[in-house]
Image (cartoon, rainbow over all chains, first blue to last red; front, side):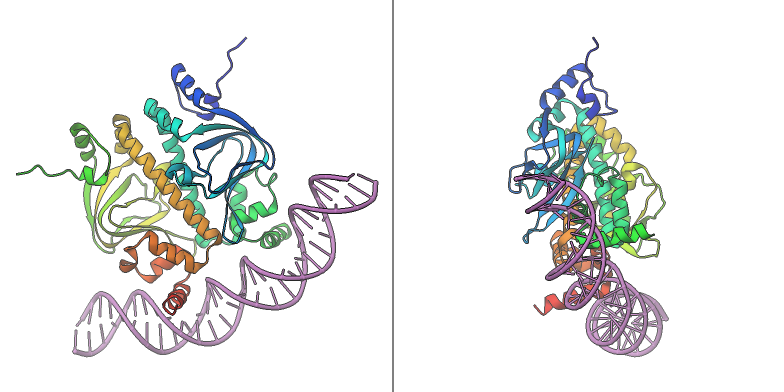
Length: 194
Length: 194
DNA sequence: CTAATTTCTTATCATAGGTCAAGTTTAATA
DNA sequence: TATTAAACTTGACCTATGATAAGAAATTAG
């Protein structure tokens, strides 16, 4: 029987690790499952983990003072998620993470990751590059906020998250775009009518 | 006479490098000066450098199809700047970088930096952490775009860039907030009147 | 110091999107 | 399948901000 491929090769595509390094990494990534409606993280929790999504769909949102929810990111297959601001700064969470569709995730703690960075420079490089891409994506979104119409932002959303639209509620998308469900409804109608 | 402190210690605060490492880093950082009005980078240029600001004030902006400018960041003393999306992805620039107040910068190329990352893991760590903070800042700005009033966003701006307001034009700030100068004018009036 | 140019403010009007409310469709549950 | 609840759509009205224009203030150049 063939030796099972490590999940590490899936998670860290295009990075070559030694067998020893793969073992070290594997030891710190924990497979966890969640079901629709589960809450992985609540505002004010301490955030010591981040997650890699194998399957499922989740969203990270902020609830403002008047109770309105604002979605900062979705995560489906092959995405990462956390309340990164809290994860990076060690401040308490301001986000909530909710499971929208049953998910299989790999969890890793900040502490373990910091340790791995020292032992495996390749790994730190991977995360640096991942952050570079993430930074670019956020900057593009900000630019969109500055000058694009809601319709354009909606179309950008469908490109960035091609498979998310199917599995999330309308109001999830609206809260990502920063508009009301009513407005999104009108925009969809407009797009449908050409 | 005392040996002059290396600029490396100023740029990479709180990181300990060996004398040899300092020399290596120093060899790749080039002091450059710009004057008010100078353009460091034009849209469509290849972006091979990023800059550390010793003194001065600059801004990075995107010009949309109808010629309107949208400021993605300002940079004053101790900030870094580039068209990071282009810098990270090697795509041609979509941003323009303009000098608002005479500036002294330290320039480093992507190529040299990539080399230094391999030689000095401490340096890669510094930039990873810098990116983590930058990511948090951008996410906070996005969150602001999703639910804050223009007035609140303006006040956030004054907190994030406490000394920038003095040296930039009103329309620079407006283009950072994603509103017209007229709107910013009204908001300032409103704030002044209590 | 004065003139010219740029920037900022104020006013009027137009519009995208918010709020509230009602009705329709879809999904969950008995 | 029927009932209930959740999600979505549509309409009427309101508000913040954009567009345009004109004048005031500040900056730069002669």
